[in-house]
Amino acid sequence: TFIGAHPPDGMKSTTTRKTLSGVDSSQLNARPHGSHGDALLKKPTVDAALTGKAATRVAQSRAHQTKPTPRRHSVYFSSGHTPSVDPRPLGDNAYINSCIRQLISFLSSHGYDASLSPKTLASPTAKEFASLALFLFRQADENFKFGSKTEDDVPTIFRQLRYPFQISKSALYAVGSQHTWPSLLTALTWLVQMYVYEEEAQQCQATKAIPEPAVAFFEYASCSYQHFLSGDDATCNELEGEFNASQRERHSQISRGVTDLEKENAELEARLSSMVREPLHKTALQQEKETFENGVQQCEEDIATVEAFLQSAKSDSVLARQKKIKNSERLDVCRAALAQLRRQVSLQSVDATEAKTIDRDIEKQKESLSLLEQLHTDVDSRAHTARVEANDSLRDMEKCVQHYNAVARTLQIVPHTAKYANETNLEAEINPRAATLNVMVNLDFKDTVRTTVKKIHDLHMQKKWNSEREFVNLEQSLQACQDTYDEKCDEANELASKAKRSESSYDAERRRLDDVLAKITKNIATIEAEVASLRNTSEDNVQETESALQSCQTEYDECAKFCGQERLAIQNMMLAALDALMGHKQLIGDALDTSSSNTFAAEGIH
Image 1 (cartoon, one colour):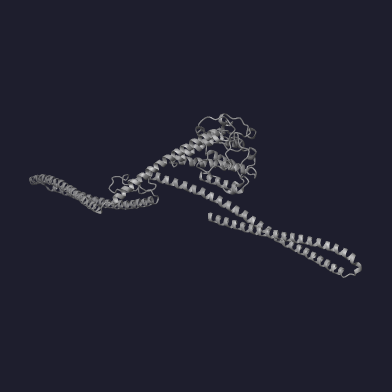
Image 2 (cartoon, rainbow, N blue to C red):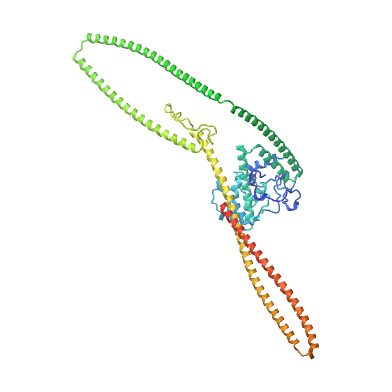
């Protein structure tokens, strides 16, 4: 099914629902198949097309069936039976360009390594088509490989993927021709749309973004569509009744919940109004009470601080007394040892050699003491340098941490209530008294922060891809508007030329009718002159004149009647021509207004 995503163009239909159970089997592919249309491929290299994602889709479609259905020649359950007529506009350039843009967008976003352009996909070679088909088939099975003949494998794989239209082998021998490429391009576009639907469905299932009513609708639509394609209208009607009943029950539950919430809201409003009407002095007393409680709490904290300080002072005093006693004992021991050494020195007799030896020892001790002092000085200088470097490194680390916190706030992962923090504290802090470098910073940048940033990056990449798809759709709409505008301009030009031709025809017909009317008027004047001359003839020719006069009068009456009829016809023709001219002018004005409004709408969309 194509619920929740844009369905492939080949499955769109504006007619009423009609199953394919009544289609003649002679119109379909008569290739033998197993139960539910599970045909087996002959080549082992093509068998891989049913593994991986494609096999998962087939298994899931079977698992969703509520009961077994008799084997019918339908699109969904038959791998070899396809409709004989493709309803998609394969001859429309705008539709073909839309398919090319969809194919380029999917391939570029899924790592297709070859160069792509609309010009290349307008008439590809057989090798380029094989490369495109191989990449798309590997989206379902990454281990897929073509056999010895690609022309045999491609139609078979599309039948296994339930493509609803037939792909002939002869079309694959001339891929880029004008008659075969649109059908092959729409087949690849159908496969791309199936992959896009599967990705969006998996994303919705992973994020649990679909609410429970939508899930129920999707399940109903999926099962109903499967039974509809298999020709089981009774099960479709039964599922529709069950779904409507469940929706009515859910609606009644929601209505009861809304009623309960309204009652609770009314009770809370009543409580709020009663609390608002309470005297103000209670609020003032409560504030004073809170102030006293805060003061008592502060005093208790101060008392605890003073008691802790006194305890610390007592412990320091005890330690100082103990240290003083130990120092006094050591001082007594040192005094006794000094007195003992003085007594020994006074009792010893030192000669010149021993005195020199003692002097040399003293000099050596002094040299050693100077070396030790120099070494102590070097150690102090090194320690000072190390402290300075440590302070510099700490300042650099603090700058890095500040920069990270600023970037984290920009990415909305700090503080823990931010949009992408997921209730996790990702704000970095430095502990300068830490014993090791690993515990100096409170975050694990390699795992925690990198994972969060990667999720944000993936989310924005998905948004970018959706934006690109929306941009492609807008481009398609703009192209359709541009095509409509061009057609309306052509129609307006054609109507203008027709109007000009009608005006010229009207002028010529009017001139002709004026000439005819002038000739008739001239003949009438001639006849009247002849009648006048005949009236002046002699009385001998009265009888003959009267008869001629009667004949002339009759002829005159007939000519006058004919002239009146012809004058009336000419007037009617002139009025009809004027009506036609005004209609053409109105039609031209409407066409120009429509084309200008379409142009403004196209510019607004762009």
